[in-house]
Length: 230
Image (cartoon, rainbow, N blue to C red):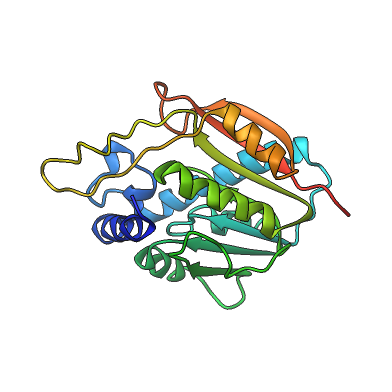
């Protein structure tokens, strides 16, 4: 699926049920998420993942972070507890609009719409930390790899990136939903290929762990890499 169609799909999902599109709990479908309960889950996730990052990269600078695929800002706002400033970027304008409703000029958080296969809206070496979970899995591997390469570029030397991807793809492009409904794609990249790419890009893998973002049946992994330099 092209980046244009991906953007269109997520815009439709965001307009229909934005919180459920981010956290697809069957019991919460149809507008059943309580917003405060929903955002509280972001605080728990941020604590869990920043604890993991601190374990493998204890000297990480805490100035600026990027939440890639931020949706409605569930984790973006929570990351502000750990960094001086946080930027959330997403492919859906409706997601960004929802996120902005909770924002204030003094929050240290800002949101940006990006519907391109790159992150040239950011300069090189702009962030100390890049975070992306349950996001890259919805993109064709070619697009996901393009963004991963951009994560390396926008990280400052000494910065770290945490991202998640399934190890396999479960998409069938030749059999779209018969009812014409929006399809939430599920793609993956083999861990071996991830390791090859990180080596090619001259970054250091600090963590690769199996996790359950895609349920128990689909192997999914959380990775942390470090960008060397002074």
